Length: 293
Image (cartoon, rainbow, N blue to C red; front, side, top):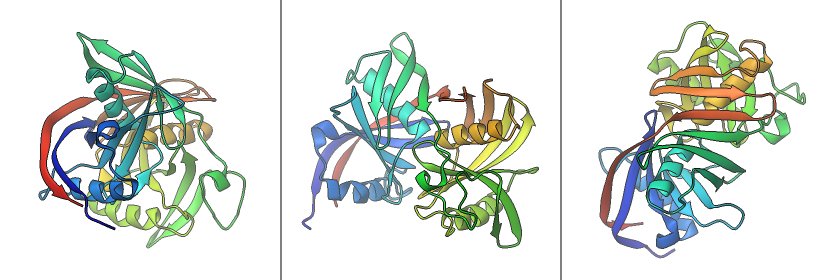
């Protein structure tokens, strides 16, 4: 495989509740497929490069207004990302790539709708129809000893603890664990890392630890697959509300306020589809002067 030399490449960096992404216009750049993961790994390195949780490529779509592809900091491609899609939506609107208040966005798994709250030409918040949750074990995928159709409140043994988890996919897989007391960073790293790569999860999994404040409010911390601890996770927050609603923890069909480390998301599970609303900000714009991958 020959090296790819990049020079004077424009990029923008955004964050949704501290979940930060580098945006690249692949319609113009046409980065070779086999180089996208390695490019993400290099650009996402903190201290040595731009630093981010992932890289988002703006791509053309044959079945929607636009297509989003997202690569984690470890170079793996993610199926979907709630915070990322809000960053993506703000970028394509404000850069006149798709100038609509309602944008159809193709992801690796689904085509979804982004509803933009625009004030004075600037996108302040984005509401995403995240689509219906996937609960069937074989589609998530999850392979427990029970091999039941759904995986709700199942036990998983990790080191000195036994957790109860519920598996939900929002285009990407999540293990939602309700706890009485939120984990410290050390605990989140220790248990999250082992659960992420547990043999129950053949494609690995994102791990959410959730503490309940009321029937319509909760706190959430996340260990993201391929990244580690992040400030928030949009799809993980959606998965947590879905699991909590099914288990009777949250009020049915009501907006649930979920406090991530980086801020608040409002999630509504109708019983059929999931809506996620939250803020998004551009951090800075810049130029990659020279890079070889």
